[in-house]
Length: 414
Image 1 (tube, helix red, strand yellow):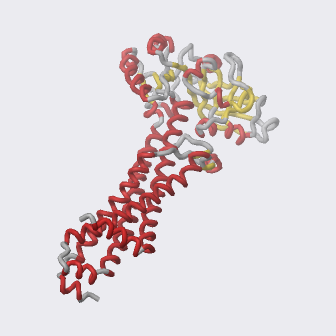
Image 2 (tube, one colour):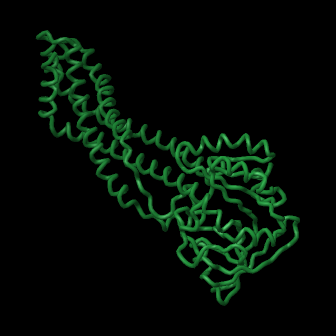
Image 3 (cartoon, rainbow, N blue to C red):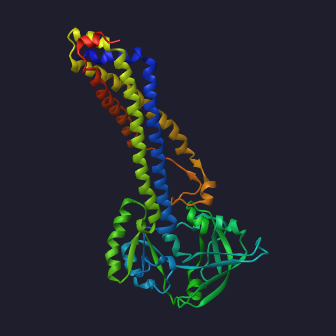
């Protein structure tokens, strides 16, 4: 049996053109799998990081029922942060109290280009403590961060660009107090942030917590306490251990996966899309190998009949074709992994700039300007093994047809 690999190698060299075409088809499919898989993993990782850095931290503590009614910003469902602060101090977590409320941002022509108003979500933050949970202050591109007690407003870069806002301009905020009374107050734009999270850059509006407490008549209450245990694997477990202790205080705690449910849904849908890609690659490999092996079989029917007449067993002939298909799969796998790595490298190094696309649309992912791939070695190994395995599997099915012919029929085959 030792001569079969050598014979298979000679056959691959003899049918060099067909071998390279088939290996090329496999290589292309594997390359696409590696590149797309690396990009999707990169999107997931960066989105998760930006979601936790700028929106959710490790999780959030709220009053009972607030999360279900979050779209209406129910200020009456608030709580005293002092109730939970001792627990957070002993847990070693960073934490940041906030008040989220809905309202209208009103601006007038001169200095703005035109009159207008934008409804949206305002977030009141503790200018000092907020950095324990979020990285907003590090994303300032113009002006300065908020100062406690001063009527300042920080806007997302795209929002400021849309309304023609600049640092120093004054706007009005129209909203309602916790008791439902109308409230209007002035704020001066003190800073503009341009962070990697497009949701913040597109619609972020931040003001000091003490100011919102006064105008909204919150009496020291907040709508949320954001908790940060870091971004390593232990962070989720630490937050989960905190949940029952928070519930014992009569509050509810929601982790970042629930807070970022739109991103999680997109990520899960992506997993299904990856399965579709794998299926298409399998089809490409199957069709390519099947066609090649059928051509090889029918071109060599008389040759194989002669081998069988001279005493070569069917299992040896089958093994010969399996060795040939394994060789084609090996070449396709090597080329595919090599091309996949070659195409992935510049995306890992420099990324793909698609900021103009994210500027106008939201797809749930928390990436703003550049898409970066990652080196996914397990996917490369899997792709290589898949190429070889599919080649061998399809070749086994293809050779079955010729072996059903008897020897005289094989020798007379035209």
